[in-house]
Length: 86
Image 1 (cartoon, rainbow, N blue to C red):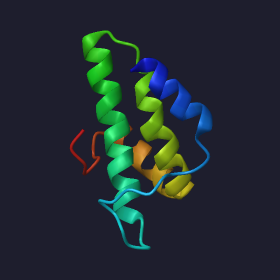
Image 2 (image 1 turned 90 degrees about the vertical axis):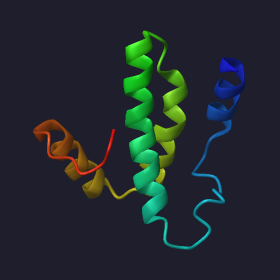
Image 3 (image 1 turned 180 degrees about the horizontal axis):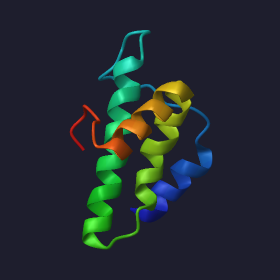
């Protein structure tokens, strides 16, 4: 499985189509991938596993989300006031 993820990451250019978010507005897609990345990071750290599979979510949210949103969300997480459930 890890080899398969590495191959996908090598071919990665931008966020692929996600049938959960079929509309032009990709705000929810951005939000969900941001949450999934941080959930994945937390889960992998708790298990003591390699967090490299989480890079998929990172690359997707980086390509979809405006930088200002990500910066704001990171600040909220540091302050402990982040509205999402991670």
